[in-house]
Length: 371
Image (cartoon, rainbow, N blue to C red):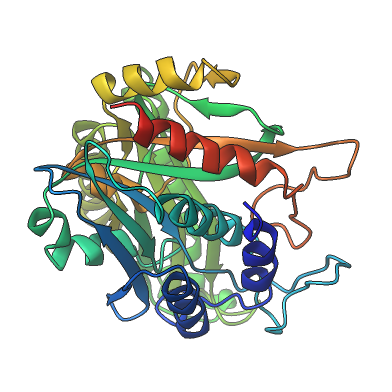
């Protein structure tokens, strides 16, 4: 694993956002070519290596490659050279683990399954996994199992975190737009107050959802609201922007149906125009029970596995691959209070002890060696 540290530090310095990871792509291609592979480009900035051991089925190991629009505040020698961008979600670590795994594989003559190493663009948005699937590569190479790993500073360094079944929620973007009519506040009866009716809609929606779906696992939160143009003008436009996170599709559809029914009620009752705009992004991450059983047995031989009682309601587009093949997604803890590595993902000071990456590589090695 002599190049693991170099991979991580080189990649950390060139973060790029989704669909624009051109320097990252070129770095990955060169690194893989130097190992003797013939890497291919997929979805413009993605890279993959297929190792054919003449078996019928393929196991895929996936790393995401994109960075974030965050200005790095770490005082380190390998700080981001791309002003305003940072690998604040650990994808530099994910890539370096998969590259190091590729180094391990280059001298091996046989495994019981073919191997696909996938470096995927645009995990942070707008969902590069779905685009990868559209290329047909999983079907063409008969990918029947998939594995993905993510660094996770919420848990102590070196711990493996996962669970059977649902691990993470789906995500649907929701905008609720209320259209009223402007008027001077001194003549409020002449206007239709979009701010007032929007606030009323929001309060009633959240109250009724708590009652109607109290036995369901979901999160609906509106984190942004904007309205109006001036303090003395009745607002003619209000918009709430939020996300809905659920585990099962029936709950998601039922909540969306309920929101639209409340919309119709408000339109009829208050003579106000309301639009509900939704965009489904990622399905729920759902670890296959049989594959997870094997994963658990192997991991526990060498590492501490923390099995979550409840799913996390964050989202990951790895879930798209699990619609096409059985798979397991798991986390690798990076919290180290002694060394000061306590900042969470998407924080401008997120960093980790690079030694922990060796554990991630070793889990890949263990998984492929024990079929």
